[in-house]
Image (cartoon, rainbow, N blue to C red; front, side, top):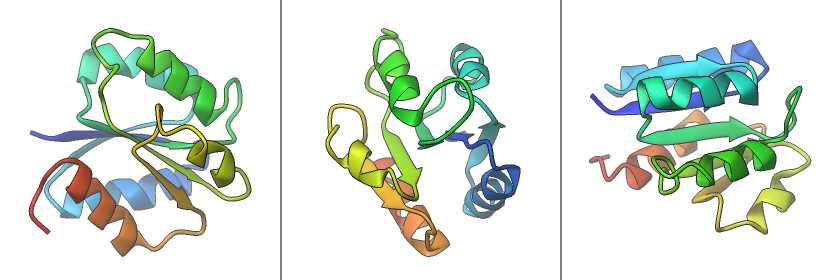
Length: 121
């Protein structure tokens, strides 16, 4: 089954994304910190990662750099979702396949996820 790792320290946002993607037939795993998400990577082998920017311990960019440094996950597509810091992610196409602003439209997130996973809309 196709797995999406959702990294956001705001649990409500993580849960909204998780429920919406599960309704589309995807398996989701959530984490509230970059450290926890890095621990999940090798266990779950996600097909796609959605990360927030501002989180305790490390930013979304620091998390993405750690993922890219890992040989098994260096090509995993990532989406950065952020309010004020989205522009920082937009300057890093080496890290993020998509950068979305918060607040987001759930339909847009689903569309981008399906496109990156090459699933039918």
